[in-house]
Image (cartoon, rainbow, N blue to C red; front, side, top):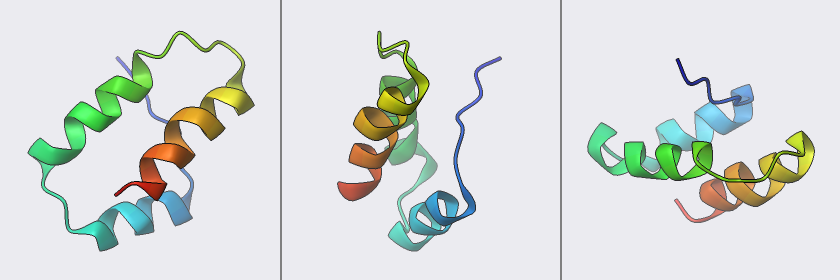
Length: 54
């Protein structure tokens, strides 16, 4: 099981993007496959970057 940590604000931004499941899943998989092991750095480089580019 892979769990993607998102804040409520992150979820709201994703919902407001109106992207389909098929468009979002590759972005989520890319974030989850990152080799970064430091949690806060991973969140900044993967999740926040992904959300900025929705």
